[in-house]
Image (cartoon, rainbow, N blue to C red):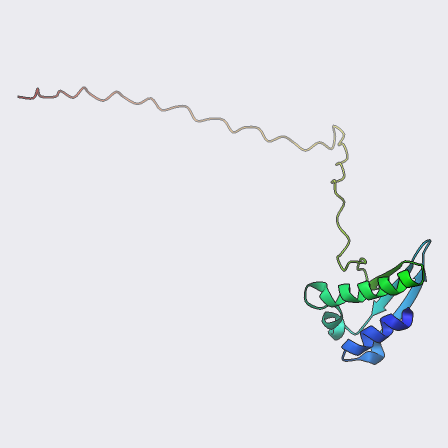
Length: 129
């Protein structure tokens, strides 16, 4: 299966001599790490990851025929589906601050005294004829 991944990658890149496939055995599956030249990463991944997903599908079919599971990781620090690892779902709680480390609370600014407005003189309206 390592040869399959190598063959697929070398067929689509500009620098086939820089294609490196390593194999890592896990408990119940095999992880294949594919590394190519930086300029060839886009060709291996494809638009919206279509090439990478096709390569993963072919690898899974070959693995199933052999009665095992296989995962293809492309590049470094990338998860099996090509996405960067996600942040934790819940933010970690902030540590409690002791009384000496508590931030000072900002007090409300003193309100300006209300200005007293003088009443307007009554306007006399002329009666309508």
